[in-house]
Amino acid sequence: IAGITQAPTSQILAAGRRMTLRCTQDMRHNAMYWYRQDLGLGLRLIHYSNTAGTTGKGEVPDGYSVSRANTDDFPLTLASAVPSQTSVYFCASSPGPQETQYFGPGTRLLVL
Amino acid sequence: GQNIDQPTEMTATEGAIVQINCTYQTSGFNGLFWYQQHAGEAPTFLSYNVLDGLEEKGRFSSFLSRSKGYSYLLLKELQMKDSASYLCAVVDSNYQLIWGAGTKLIIKP
Picture 1 (cartoon, helix red, strand yellow):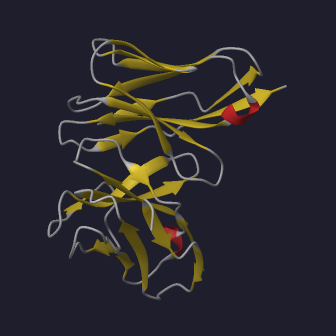
Picture 2: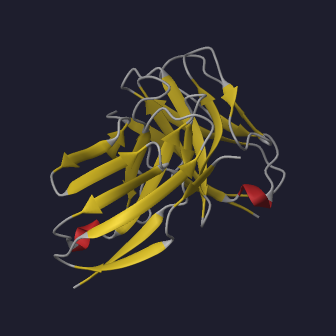
Picture 3: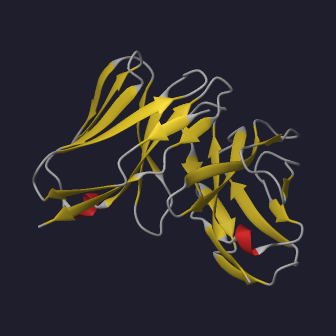
């Protein structure tokens, strides 16, 4: 692994289903983030983690949960997907909370 | 509230110079980032300004005026590969990034 990876690349999901988006980084960065990007709205922060074992809510946390059991992994879970969660989801990491963020390739999610 | 303003779209000619502006109103200021994002790809880091003035990096330069809540990204000797969206983001008082919606730059031959 080099950098930050996300899985799956894309997914079509039925409304009401549970889904976990995976994110892994090998840069030993302390901070990790989940964003969603919708046309015309820019990146919006869903949840973040400044260090392993801690998480915080961003601008649009409702309907999403995260965990940070170790430094490398930061999964995002949609407990019961709704069509408004159709978006492109980007995971990012940075050495510290205010430092340069490095992005994964994104997951394109369509909820029907 | 917090707000980042950028033009939605700009068009420029290959070989020319273009300036992309960003104005911000945020709760605190701890730096400003510019990122480039090609269509269908992830954002990639271009520049970071925390002090007033101009930071030059090859064909790209970024300027910051904290008193005016203003930054710009200057791209020189434009190439077709510079066609992308350019995102402005401000680090607020909670050390979180507040993102603008991005400026889509179209380069014409």
